[in-house]
Length: 262
Image (cartoon, rainbow, N blue to C red; front, side, top):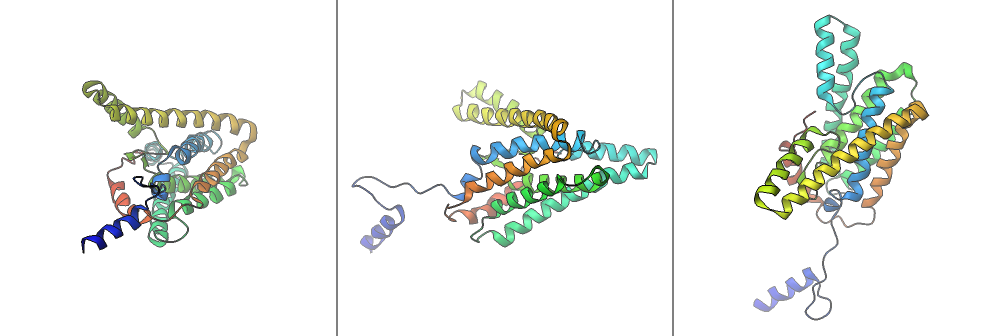
């Protein structure tokens, strides 16, 4: 009995040379929390907000708190058209979360990893927005908000740390919190977390600046740069094993703890 158990362990860890253990490859779930996937989509998130605000009529793609404030202002002033302008992206933001959740339920254990599918849907949606004229800004903002919601719901951890990939308030709070923890406890892990959150904020800010410059130069087509980034990020999952995909069930439950603050 003991020998059978020992042989089973060996088949799982796959021994190489005597005394060495061959480490397992990174799972797709771990890859989705890595910098090579998150940096381009954080950058593109900053671009989204700058694009929708400066190029599409003063609407926030990510910062739904801002849209709620502006919607409430229009309701109070009796401006029906202004109310619709902000309530539509809010509605589509909610729809984006629903679609991301459905993709998880449908593709959680399929060959196409659900987070990869989210990036591909986002890339297609944003690419289409680039061809929409200014007269369709209401619908363009709805689609961009939809894509942003899918992203923030799906990519909510960076190396195990809960964070937001499309907004900064929560990341700013966590930067300050982990900074104090690192100073008071001299904890190296707290310093790492602080650095990750700070990096996310800086990359978002750079993306926003790029979005402003790109929409000045390319107009409606500027959003296609975000589409390209999402498409390129999806390649990180190709050829990787599906082992670990089912752990997203637990991760998805932890979304409730993530502060989707805007």
